[in-house]
Image (cartoon, rainbow, N blue to C red; front, side, top):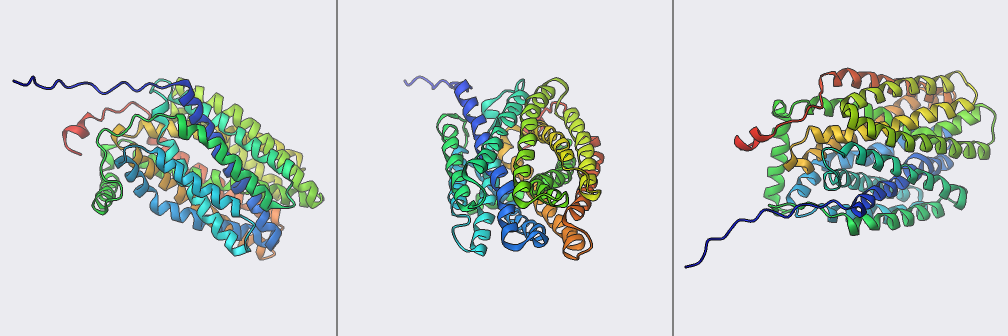
Length: 442
């Protein structure tokens, strides 16, 4: 007679320091792309080709198209990663696509380069979604704020690298600089690919099944319709649209804004470019410090209270930044605004990633991070589009000089921060009990 099989508990997931360090280093790697390409040098590439008057509108529209792509596919990608045995292959391929197309920027025709940027930026955003969803694999509930904060803080060293690449390779031949960014991004991504061990999916399902994709889409729609089962989720997602709308848009045009303020203050193009890189370095320095500090604050007072303080800081930052452009204030004040923006950047991502995890059932992290990514991409569509509208009305019309028109744009974006603060008032970060979802079959 055969003895009955004895059920064994799944092996305990061990989080090693090497895994944590490798996960953190990927944050540094992808920041090289976001700062070097999205926030700095690609907008300068467009400005060089179409002029200061048309650069804002064109860059805003190109960015909006890129984010529209990832907005549509984010929930589908999230559902696919929930069905897959592991998320890492998705992160690897999205990184490779982003790196390959970044290396092509500027080596082909102008409009071909625009297409390459659109796809590269979408691939980067998809990778960020997969990466964020792996935070539970390298942290516990008790240290999630600290680990996430370390990721943000160390990640901003990638911005240092992006700026230093600009100094080392020069900004006169941007195609060479884009190749340098691509190589560095890929090299620093490899430790994450090799050493981060996931908990794994105990019940994997077909990833590319049409039926599974349809069911996953239905599940996402059902989640949105039955928001009361997930306290605070829908309100957080809506509020996140508005604050990420404002913050991401300002980050993406910070370098271009500096060039225009420098021009209004009588500096040459070369002096303005040097000032822009120096101001970005200031912002990055304070983002590093802010990431560490805000991460510890998350573990002490919770992600929601931390996020409230971060948004208050952003309102003050936007007020100062808009005044500099509108009133043609001295360029040195941009260093003050940049330091405040850096602290705010570190705090935003250190607080809202743990808050999203607090609102997420453990077995649906990929899907819910798809929603998290989707609203971020929606804001990345609307933000540049609204920026382009303001630029068209104020700058291209000849009504205002570029720096003044951008100052109006910053005020418009600040109103989004205020609106998001009002929307988020009803969200709490209390620990959720998800057992009722398992028992009722949801």
